[in-house]
Length: 288
Ligand code: C2E
Ligand code: MG
Ligand code: MG
Ligand code: MG
Image 1 (cartoon, rainbow, N blue to C red):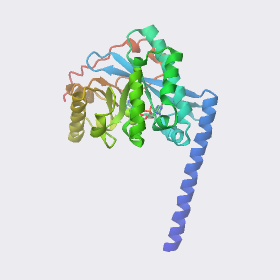
Image 2 (tube, helix red, strand yellow):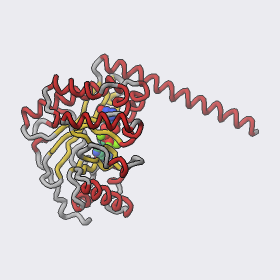
Image 3 (tube, rainbow, N blue to C red):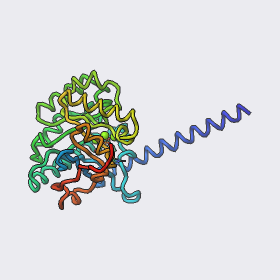
Image 4 (cartoon, rainbow, N blue to C red):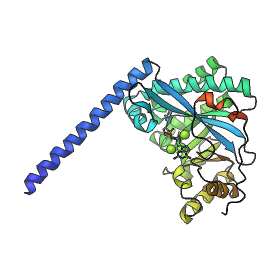
């Protein structure tokens, strides 16, 4: 019986593996097609200054408009893109498109801080990222200070010496740098001091249980205090409720991003008024 079950488990296991690798191959083939046929899209999610309620920046988030599957979200394809190296051309496309869009916003909407673009570990390791960014800024005419790159701690940790060197070069270029999903990595404290970054983004997993969960409250308080001590700007991601907003404001979190203000949307939707809108960040009737 044990032998029989073992065999079944084995078959089940290989079947699952085969399905998984087939899915990944389908995604990989699809992504090559997407790049060649202009199926990638960017959505932008505003970042709101917690004091004034003004939009201080936007994060560019990639989507894939698949002819049959509809709009595909990055969680389904970024890891395949990373593994296959396709993240390099995809990342270059994202960068160019976001910079072009930001340049257009700068011209039509005046004071606009920056567009944030996510950069994967592999983009640091495999390409001359510095050159790609330099060239993209030159071609689009976007001032370096209007571009922010979001990197995760784990990205830096994959090859700390090389990544830190590139980060220092990027900083000299005038590009802003931020640490994404902050708090989920391993070496926050040791490395944070060495990262030439201007801001950290508190991961959504710490925001989601605010303000009821004591552990989340303690962590978020500590992260904000630490970041401010290091003269870093703090952004909270995944802000969905007035109670979360209220707690984050009470802790002097600098800016906020989340469905409470806006989901990531098409650039067209941001144009009419959102870019110059003032959001209500008072949440005054909400108990902490
Ligand atoms: P991320 O950079 O941490 O982006 C934040 C994610 O949280 C986005 O998911 C955003 O839509 C979502 N989000 C924002 N506010 C809320 C909220 O209030 N509630 C909830 N439930 N979710 C919220 P998205 O767009 O699906 O992106 C997922 C991840 O994929 C990103 O996480 C980023 O790591 C990666 N990604 C997206 N675009 C790119 C890209 O152009 N290049 C690379 N390398 N990675 C990307
Ligand atoms: Mg991000
Ligand atoms: Mg994040
Ligand atoms: Mg995330």
